[in-house]
Image 1 (cartoon, rainbow, N blue to C red):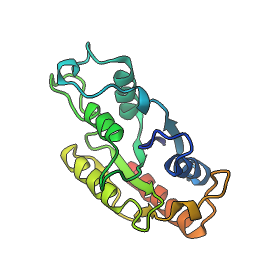
Image 2 (cartoon, rainbow, N blue to C red; image 1 turned 90 degrees about the horizontal axis):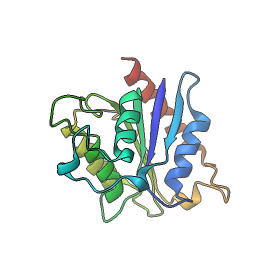
Image 3 (spheres, rainbow, N blue to C red; image 1 turned 90 degrees about the vertical axis):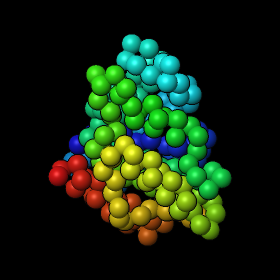
Image 4 (cartoon, rainbow, N blue to C red; image 1 turned 30 degrees about the horizontal axis):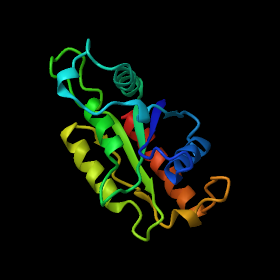
Length: 184
């Protein structure tokens, strides 16, 4: 099964990027996680350009990748008690079909959410905000296990490798749950 991983952080050395790379390392045998690298290129959502023949190239690429993926794996940091604007913007572009011609890429799409943050509370609020977005898109979100990597600087080594066994176990459980949603 093909999973598209989206990192809500643009920072090159983000712990959320490291968490997605760890997901690739620990993915089930029948899963292939591709990490999306085009988030920075997506322009701000503009309904005037939200039709198939007007989409900017990065938007068309994102929509195609989301549509072709069997599921999504999103790693989000927490900014101001919510999700980063660049991530919300990308989801806005993938959540529409005003002309009723292309279908909504996120509709019924299996989605797993995780996140890493240096704070003691992790990404709890960001993940709640993200779950709320997916209610509107009718996406099929994995409910448990929740992977909220708090004090993330303690869970990764200097090379960005996930070294915390509890987090590895939770990550494996999340990937298994996502695989189950994709299969059902």
